[in-house]
Length: 116
Length: 112
Image 1 (cartoon, chains in turn brown, red):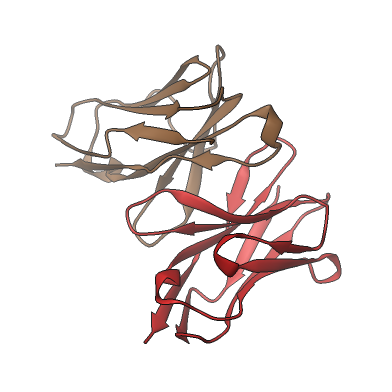
Image 2: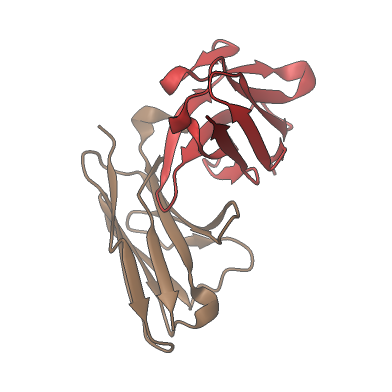
């Protein structure tokens, strides 16, 4: 149980285009979803927190107009990287939690974004 | 805000030897602590978690960790390393807002 999927697993795009990444909780309704980015050989950095039906809360230094987050349902959150540039190339990981499991988060497999 | 320090960015052990990964946290309130493992190009898998119950926590794959409040530590151990334990390990602490703060990570390599 508590499986989180991400799609796509890998994406390559040209500079200036927008990319959408989906995060789904497959067998539970997620109270909250989180988006992280991870640079090579580094730790995970929280980008934003999203709750279903409300605006995402972004961490300091994360451009909300560049990284658009939509949490349309209790099982789906999307991250759109708008006007992507090479410096946005990274590994993006989502996680989800639900009230019945307290503080534990369940992580998706990640999406490797490469911007040319 | 919570923070986590992982001592040692890289640990190399022989197969069958003890694995010890160190984690210290700073917290002004009782913490919720986690150890995750990450294999290349994959997400994170929970190894174990401390949520104010027993101070010695047993997890998957033979790992365990001991919460020591006096030392603000939550070190991860495994008595006998296996080749499949080669991975990146992250210690994390959660605040009451459910956000996770991660340590820098420790890369474990296992020598045959």
